[in-house]
Every structure is written in C-alpha cells, then in structure tokens.
Amino acid sequence: MEDPLTKILDRNEDGKLSAGEIKRAATALLKLDKDDDDALSAEELKPEEPKKSRRQKRKEKEGEGQDNPRPPKPPKSPLMEALDTNEDGELSKEELKNAIESLTKLDKDGDGKLSQEESGLKSKEERQRGGPPGGGPGGQGGPPPGGRPGPPRR
Image (cartoon, rainbow, N blue to C red; front, side):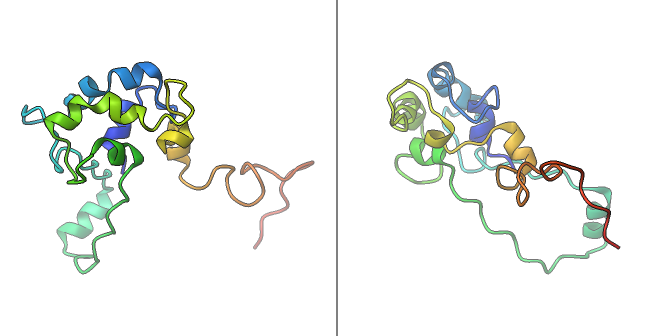
C-alpha cells in the first residue's frame, strides 16, 4: 500500500522532496480532499487497498479467509509526523496551511530540499523492489562476481 502523502508530494517519485515539491505541498495535499472541507480526514489519508487477484476475490466471495486477522496498521510516515502537529491522524486547515513550514523542519542540512534520509521516503524503484536495498544476500541481486550462477538445484 502506498502512502497517499508520498504519492502526492513526491511528484517525480525519486524518494526526495525538491524545493519546488515542498513549495507546492499545501496545494498538492488539497488534491486528496475529496469532501472539499479544506482539511484531510483519516479516511482521505488512508492508503489505497492493493488490487486483488481473481483468486483472492473468488475466495472472499466463497467466504474463505474470513478468520484472518487484519494486518497491523502501517507506521506513520515521517511526512505525516511532520505535518500532523496535533497528532490526531488528520490534517486540519491550519496544518495544511503550515505544510511548507512543517516540511522545512525536516530539512536538517538547510539546503531547501529533503533528501531520502530527511524525508524517510523511498524512490519508486525501491518501493517496487520491496526488500532491502541491494537485493539481499549476494549484492545487487544478480550473478555472483566473476561469473554465472551455478546450475539450478534439484
């Protein structure tokens, strides 16, 4: 599930917020405001559910998997922590108005933009890859240095 704040603020999906992306934050965030109240409710900030396969839909229709507990709530993104100053899980008119100031507080090196370390974001490629950077054991996920992978195990 992709965080809607990440999707709307990190327009080029590089895992960083440029000075321009920060400057347009308040306007961009209002695109999530479905009920036009100039604030973002918890429902409007909720990540979209992932698309379900035909098999998953069929199982749900047949009643399978109904006893499965709900997955834990994802942790609050660093962006939400910065923007939600009263920590109520929603973004009020005042919090949206102060979005630039709130995001600027994350800019530890004062360069006017937020690096991946400062924003806590991942690039589109990192999100799609899903695991740790580097592809896990063996480096970048490719063949070992100096050759091809060995024969498949049986």
